[in-house]
Every structure is written in structure tokens, then in C-alpha cells.
Length: 475
Image (tube, rainbow, N blue to C red; front, side, top):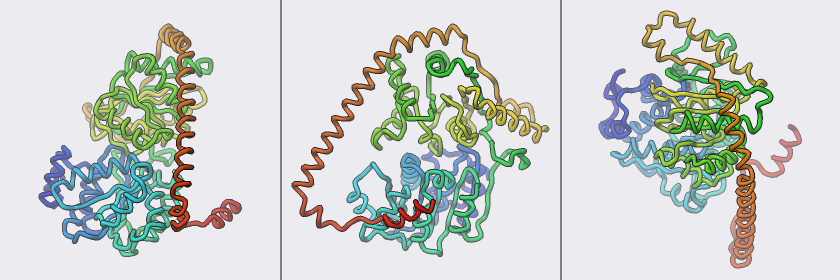
């Protein structure tokens, strides 16, 4: 399919597609949209950056055009707040020439009462994270999923990895049995298979890949085409401050614009944020220690190129579509190849080129060899590629940083250690002040509104404390 008009979409949606800047349907969109419009359950997977979100939104919006308003017909579940906000923004753009209504239900953005008011207006689409939605379904009067006709489980493997299995199962039980379910998952494991058997009826399985099916390890290690992968060897004597010096050297000398740096821990990401600030590098951070408004602000700053570097944990590794990301740097090689694939999938999206660079220690070099072996097998599977395609396909190379450059930045970091410690101490004091202030406000509220608080109905979870305790003991 060469153009969107061949997918029999209505004119208002075609105008929305133009507003999104889409020209030609991607492979996953061409495969999913006709099947979804036919009303079949779908279980789909494709390489990162292939347009999966539009693949499920367009057929749902098309069918909602012919449904009466005033009832919630669609529920979209995502693993993270950021991914939910991105999906909600895409709905706003694609449906801007229609009267379709939608609402975002996640923790940390609005208070519960404001969300209850929005849910009671019966929006046609709810985009939500499982925890907050289940809280509303269990405790908020007038909030129900009994009219849902379309259920989307986006990044299903990540939903389960983050521990939402029981919540997702409970939400599925709250939806009508007679519904259409669309499940998108990057990897298909036992947990996802169990979820498929629980939630879907004879699903159509769609797998978009430009790689042959025979892989030696049975796992999908596919990376986007036109992605250059680089590895910097970190020898056992160069850990610690030398690794930070290598990263600082690359951010200063080579990868100075539109770069995402991934860290394993929030503390390392924050320390590098302070270090970048002291060195005059414009950066923003994205991790779980930030409030929801702070996370969204960091993403917006990076999207608008107000900052050059985004320092993130794996919170940003899945699903987020940030245009024009030139480079992804891994401060450490993740301990799972799948995590590595999702991280570097933030660049080289939708057919564009991109680069990744990973600082890899001696303990995880076996993972790099696994990636190189997979790339070698992939080239053998497609020996008849044209020279043009070969030049655009993923390449792997090593990168070295001169010892003199590393020594220069080690010296620079050591000279800034005192300032870094001062900043961390000042932040700790400010954090304690905020906590004390919150406790005072909480105490005042309890004193002033004690009767109202006591009169509120107790909130319940779908599992009681007794059930949780018995589950814990059984485990």
C-alpha cells in the first residue's frame, strides 16, 4: 500500500494524517489497519520506530466516527505515564477534525477528583496506566468500563515486566467479553502468551521484520536499519571516574546535539546532570525521582531543542517517539540485550539514520559478541542485497578515546568533585525542607477538615490487605 487513501479511511482522518506529517503507510500500518477495520483481534510486533501507535489509533478512530458519543468505547493501556501522554497527544492531532473525545488518566498529573469529573463525561477514548485506572474503576462512583468495544494493550511485555500483570488482568475482566482487543508487544514471552490467551479470541498474529526467521538463539535482536552501532571498551582499571570522563569527552567533542544518554540508576543520571551543568553542557534529566510535571518539562525541552542532552534511565527506553534524535549513548551496557535494543531504538526511527555508542566493561563483552554474531547472521540471510541497501543497513564498529583526552577530563571531574558534593548537599537540605513543609500542611488539613476526612468512604484495592499478605506468604 503506497498511500493512506488506499486504506479506506474517512476524509477527517486523512486530514489528521496530513497534519501528523505522514506521507506513506509503514509496513505495520499497512498490515494492521485493514485487519483491525474488519473487527479481528490482533497480536502484533515490529521493530521500534515503525509507527505502531498510528497502526492501532487510525482504525479505532475510523470506527468511532460511526458510533454515537456519550459512552466510553475505547480503552488504551500503556506501561508508563510518558507513553500515555504521547499517545494522547497523537489522538488529539489525528482526531482534530472530528468530534471524538478523549481523556488521559495517569498518576501524578491531575488530582483524583478532576479525573473523576472527566471520566463521568463519558469520553469516547480513555488513555491510561493500569494502576490509576483500576483505582478509579474500583473506588470512583460512576466510572465503569461496561461499554468498552476496543481494548488496546500497548507495549504488553513492558506492562508485565513492570509488575502490572494482576492489574491488567483485573481491568480485562471489567471490560465486556464481546470486544475487539489489539495487543502490541516487542517480545513474545510466556507471560505475554498467557495474556493473549486470557484477553483475545483467535487473534491474527502480525509480525513485521526484514530479518529471516531462523535465529541461532531464538530471540529477536533486530535493530532498525540505517543505525550505526559503536562500542567503546572500558578496561577493568578504567571503571568509575574514568568512565565518567569518557562520557564527558564524547558529549563535549563528538555527540553534542540531540543525544540521549541512558543510565542504569537514577543516582548516576543525576550526578552526570550536575556534572554537565558545571561543564556548561545544556542538559535535562528524565527518571523516577522527578515529579510528573518535571518529567514532561524535560521531554518538552529536549523535543524543542532547548537542551542538547537528555540524561535518562530506562523510563525513556520504551515507546517514546522523539523526532531528530541523532545519538543514543549507553553509560553502561544493559545486562539484557532486549533492553539494549529498546534503548538504541530511540534513534534511527521511521527510516531515518542514527547512531548509538555504548561504554562496555569487561563483564558484559559477551553481550556485544552476541549482537555482533546476530548482525553477521542477518547479513548471511540476505546475501542478495543491493549495494545501496547494504550501505543503509546497520553497521557495528569500535570507537577509541585517546588516553590523553580521558586524563584531561578525569582531571576536570576531580577539580569539580567539591562543587558536585555541595550541590548534592544543598539538594538534600531542600528536599528535607519540602518534606517538613508537606508534613505541616498535612497536619493542618487533618485538623481543619477532620470531620470531612473521617466521613469519606474508605478506598479499596482489588486485592485486600489480607489477600496481599497471603499471596506474599505463598511466594
